Length: 339
Ligand code: NAD
Ligand code: UFG
Image 1: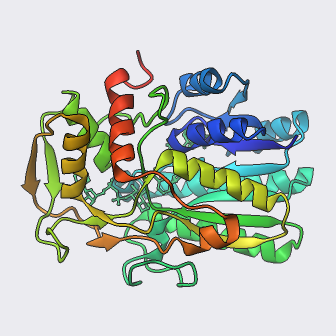
Image 2: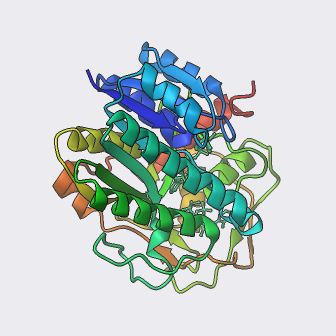
């Protein structure tokens, strides 16, 4: 039975991945400082799966404490979710973003090297394709010029992993480039729980629907897209989580360095998200059109073929599933994990 350490595993994507790994028979150890999450998420993972998770509260930048975790557990692979991810905040606080995101990565790589752990999967982002690559994004494209410090941390961390793997032939790395994860576990027991005003579209839509926010502003309707609003490759978080299980299966049986997109390959516009949410859930989402948001690209979606070829994975859930499950989580947990 292989044991997988989830760095930042109490967060949105980590908690959903924990469920799928446990369901697939893996043991799971979670390390998190709860800077953007709650241990309640892991208690609920245990409730959904009927299995236990070993949980450590610590800052991954703290090497000495991380060493203790690796000493106490025989880790076969690491998934590195731990990071700060708010694009706007990264512009205001770049040093905090570089410090946290890059130091957690270095700390994990040093500890893995010390304990002979050779497999790591990293949460990268479509943002590393930058401004100038044409859509759909394919993994063979060069990393581009990012529009904000958050994107740069991802780009730099990809470089760090590639350099580390070049220097150590035993080290296997899979860089997973996520597109736009939305939705929640179909039980409605775990989901996305942003602190304060949501930066991202789907949590904002759900909070308007539940009455926590007055009105959604759609950022721009003069883009060169079919309806004038931006398009994105939205992917159900449970599909994304299952992609991680496939990546773990793969890395445990291959010595590899791979970059893999996790998206559906199908873009939807902001207006389509709002109208699908309203139709599927039978609820109105008050919205107005406002100016463009700085740094937004008109269109962004994946070529999703490599994940199918290498991992045997494709997203299975559609936009209706994503909207239904987002709402199911939000209406059952209007205050997220703070009941
Ligand atoms: P999240 O904020 O819900 O989860 C990240 C977790 O890392 C949180 O639980 C947080 O407390 C923890 N963490 C942060 N710094 C830490 C530290 N120094 N020590 C210990 N724990 C720490 O975010 P998420 O949406 O689950 O994203 C997971 C990863 O995927 C992140 O690296 C994010 O940048 C990346 N990503 C997310 C998206 C998205 O839209 N959600 C898109 C692309 C990439
Ligand atoms: N949007 C609105 N109103 C809102 C929030 C968002 O109209 O209140 C629009 C945005 O303008 C954009 C779309 O909804 O057109 C999606 O915006 P999100 O903020 O949800 O997502 P982004 O595509 O901007 O960014 C996300 C993650 C990043 C990641 C990127 C690419 O937040 O971490 O996808 O993977 F890098």
